[in-house]
Image (tube, rainbow, N blue to C red; front, side, top):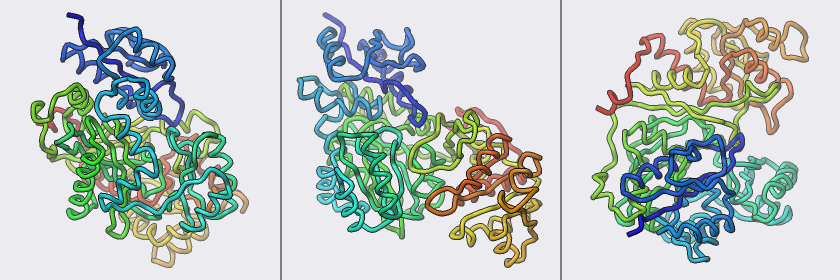
Length: 516
């Protein structure tokens, strides 16, 4: 009797701003199939991935991930089915046409995938389940977009549908910005509609990774983003378990996750992104596939979710696999993103809706502060424990920065700030040295950075567009290796981390010790 075969579709070519975590999932799928005595056939076309190594799968097709090419391979190999969940958006985009050609999609059906991807069908599901999402609409032209944005109310998030890494995604605040960004979005995806969503300012974002066998759903991990909504999930630092969410909010997130997995008839992995504002839980998007956080969650809980999902897709149940309850952990893990800014001269190190990171690291310890400090160290940003902090923030952040500045002063740091920020700090009894901006004379901020007179920079971008001098401050910080923080939430976490380092010596334990 011939050995059974399964085709695994990879993520295809990578560019900066796309996660390579899908490669991890594809490899684990191949290993899991081998355990089950099934031949794995990998289809991928990136020489840098582990999935395209000669010994990862039983057979490798180094081919483009198009419907035509995949159908040719299926015609030759005659597999029992195809796994599309582990390659990110690229294989998901061709799942419906593959199914239409008679290809068996293992796990979650192509129709369920389309329900989650298609804006109208997805809205119907949320309405049926009584779940909340931000006001939204679609458009295929600027005129439609203008009308939709006006009805929803600014600010709005504009993005093309079915694109990778948040490409061409922007937060827009008025019609003039909308015109420019719609043009950019249509250029990125000319044949797709434009998605327009109400932007929830100062909301907390949450990512949930879960696995389902069609009847039982188990949550692998609930991750709270450290940065506020508006930063791409691939760039935001995340903490597992959540560190500020109430038990009531967590329970509601769990209920929503179980309901969505059941309604979409998920078999395998599902990732759901939520936003919490004013104690209301909003569903942002549902991805019936592996997410970029699967490797992180799997390492934190000590369970390979990609391995389990592969076995579920070929017919096993979570009960038979012994995974029926959400893992309880007694440690804290922080996922931090790694950015390529240092390799690009004059690159502006500010975060936004379009993904810019090229990798991820993890910090793990008994407390949030220590775990966060370790994550920064791993990402190449060593938080200082003494020295001078430069603070220059936009007006809306001045109230929040006062508490952090007081904390830094109490920890022994000296403070310097630009005129407006310095005034706000002095008004609250803080001793601060005023520094000049680039156009106010020398020595200015960049001179201080070049002379290494600054040990930490907290700079939040002002206005709708980044000012030129602020961009130069950030690029100079990257160039000279000075730790840079561009969000208030990131500053809060960093101060927490610095305080933890000063109170506790960093220790090293292997990950198996945390799991035991």
